[in-house]
Length: 412
Image 1 (cartoon, helix red, strand yellow):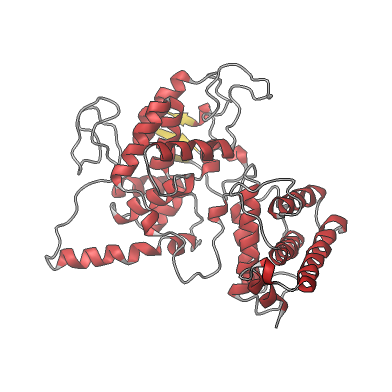
Image 2 (cartoon, rainbow, N blue to C red):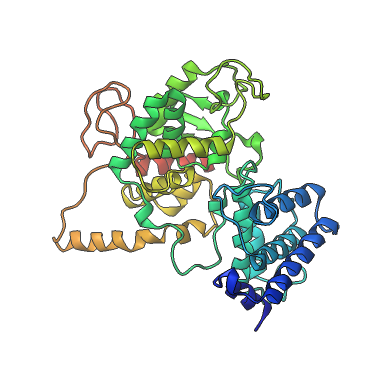
């Protein structure tokens, strides 16, 4: 039996049934792998500190730190985590503590194509690369203060789409989430609407400053100074977030143009050293979205990434945007294939619906999922098939032709 298979099988055996000598051997294997990280010189001191802390959070025998999901791992799995993360850190031309998900995905592609030192020319198998991606995703789950969205690290050539359409919000759930966010205050309403109507990554939204948002024009500029936009730049439409962004800007605790838009609600610095106008911590955003989802009984993942999935799905399925336009809006590089893999579910159920409509077996759906029942700006009732409010002009839904023209202008 190979070493990798032994690790795999150890995950499915109750520890009480494992031979004591075998259990000791697995623990020794883990401690040896951990010592190589602690004493080695292949990685930076900051990476070493972060990796060891992550391993301790997964180790039931140390119990020094705790994973956000509360799970711990067996000694065999810990040994694999330690080995794979050390190799990734050593092979990377970037620091894990300063990386973006684009950097990580680029390295994984290099593993697949044999463009990494110590890797054979024909590259590593999909399964071997996935064995590296899993621990790395969990590493960034623990270190959620780093600028990597773990959900953007996609497993190599999955047979199924990373997006489960059963997790997709319904229009009613979206409206319930928006209503609850408004009830909690203008900042939370602004945050939810930015996630919903722009499709941006959590990091891109948290890096927005007051000066990056143009309410009169209904646009915002990506904060290129943040350095984690993976080549994306320029402006994007606020769409239905325009009203809630305006409301929060009026109540912003500082009003200073260089301060962050999504910040703390208090106007005074607190004793923890957090000042008004500082960027909100990603873990704070995660917890707040969870509270909102729990309050309205949505049993689907209420996180920043699921809003991004919803936006892309609506743009592609309901508004017929082409892939290049959507990639520009959400910040994917033109030659990236991540979006096509991620949203493969659109080619199943939705093509079935199109065929049924063409044969007269189903009525075409005219509603626009991003349009609320009542206009946020003027309070007038809206029909399901309206893309904007005819009374005040506030636009909720991306018009395919109009956005494509804007994208072409931006690119030029």
